[in-house]
Length: 394
Image 1 (spheres, rainbow, N blue to C red):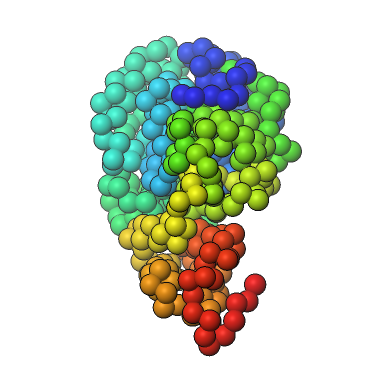
Image 2 (cartoon, rainbow, N blue to C red):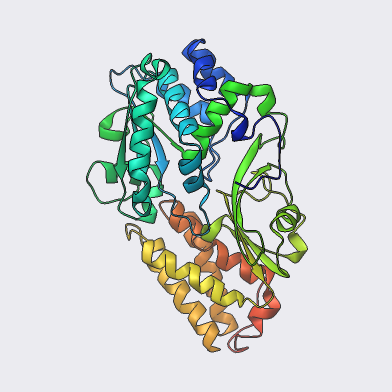
């Protein structure tokens, strides 16, 4: 893995079982307090405080509880979890076991993306070795693997649970939340692959070390997948607060025109915004950064993303089911030069409605690339619309 931040928290510096061993010497509440002091936020994109999930699940008085590792990495442009699963399996298993100890869970599941089926045998062997270790056995925690079927929507935690229960992968209404009524109705904590690895690192190095980098509201490092028009694509470790420009320089970007931060569901930044930072306060990301060179047609980029979302929408709610299709038709009209300024304004209004009215993150984020490209590349876009039946409205 390429790294730009070399310090006490890089995964290569974590000794096997060190974080787990230290966690088991503490009370479950102290483990949660340590993670709370580290201000760890989920690394899957939403950035929800991890300690809140842990404490809420720990407070549930039930004999059966689950810890689920969300390895359904389906965001276009994101491949960091694949690298972590391949090269840092033990850290992930240790993080899951630490969470089990902290919450009283006895059962764990790795929900593995269908396209990552080639990793299953290796993970199964790693789980067997992990269980045989005395430390892992001391908290009676069993981990198994559940294979997903390739649906993007199952990256959403409640749709993931529905999939595991044999139902169609669709988001649930909340409340109730998974910490009280999750998999099979039992208290469940669900977190991203990277989050579990950082939990093991925090328990080994301490909350203070984790807090030594980052921003006020985004602590610690972030693992990022960088791809697109660059000489050095790969997976990198950056401290939160790193500028987009630093990422471009590290990956040796080739004449960058724009950067899509957060994959297809993220936002597009033009060159005037490369000084912005990777953080929850500024530009959040699940871990994908796609570099777009000067020869890229931004409308074709948006079309590519919208085709993905129109295909992956579960169809449960109207704003997403119909909105993604209408936006895609609108972009095709712009590419053909048959979209008026007035209709473009209607598409912008539709996008804003989707962001507030869609049931889950897929529909809420599907218009992000469209809106940010329209905003950042107005001159390029307006040159391909018909100036009839109305004018452009900012």
